[in-house]
Length: 465
Image (tube, rainbow, N blue to C red; front, side, top):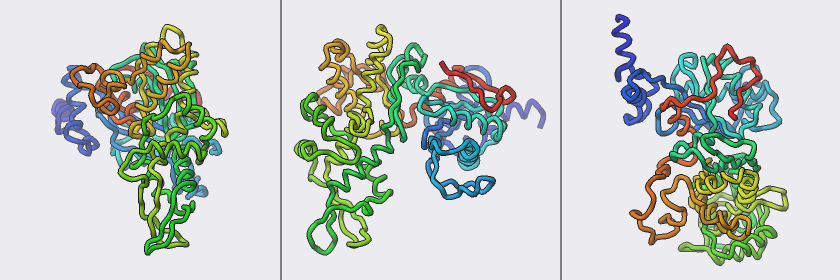
């Protein structure tokens, strides 16, 4: 084939890389569509987002990642680090040395390339989505693996918070990133992340799962098949698979059904990791909405055989209170306090713009009702303080059309035609929003901070400020 024919084949649909053939037909031609839009061949990059427990990977221009690869599992390396095979690790494990961390990142990223992307790492540039929650030592390990081991020609760094707001068509807002092992509140103004005013917390999906497990052991009942009285649930009955099923499929954030000040006092005195006071449990049970007061699940007990586990419905509807209110007994700050302190530290002229565009991202944001509950609690807390009372009416979610309190989830009488249609970012999943933002930025040729393979010394990284 001549050079002209090869060039035409490369820029045609028939020349689409084999990795694109695994994507839906609506997204496989994203590179071709970008070429028609800009009048030249648009470069397709690999987009990676590394979280504390998940790697999301795909190609620029796609509306969703190809895969969400779990990295918080058994270490399976068979090379020099094979002696650690079978041990539990994650990217944010502080006990890992640099050599083990590099081996873990290399194993996981290489597996993503081989199983999902199906491209040569040396042939594609990488756009890396960086969250403020990711430690610097992990960022260095990722750069060493991509530029050193996999020989990627160039890595472009994008701030995750700015990219997430791009999916809503916004350049200013307050991004609440609640992931697996921690959370962060980052203000973004005029397309720039104000990391100096960011707040980092230890609450996240991992703590939420531990809280659900503790509440089930404290309040759930077990009844064996074949008759007999119910007995308290045992920790062995709450297996990891059952806990994952409850957190991912049955959990929700119930709306506030009591006075905010009174509830805040009860939560401060009676809410802790894995336990609630009797008074608070009675208050939760009295406001439970559902066909029955319990959720029934079939479990196996090593001592009592097979039976049904009766979990109070309020356990799965009120477990997120720990993330919102925090745990004063164990010195775990909640999201509401962190948002209030972030606003107090932010410049005065940016506060109204930030509070009017709150964007909740991360895996915990996928819990039904969590985003609206956060806005409801935040508005109640601001209205109760003289200093913030003027900003309480401006609280709104960035991805929702119109004010959050006009959502049909909270106000059935809200008319769709009367709501603002300018914010339509709710089409993207909250967990994928940062990745989607970087994908859009690369497709629209919005530059980030570039680092070439020959310029990386193995330690120094560019600053995104």
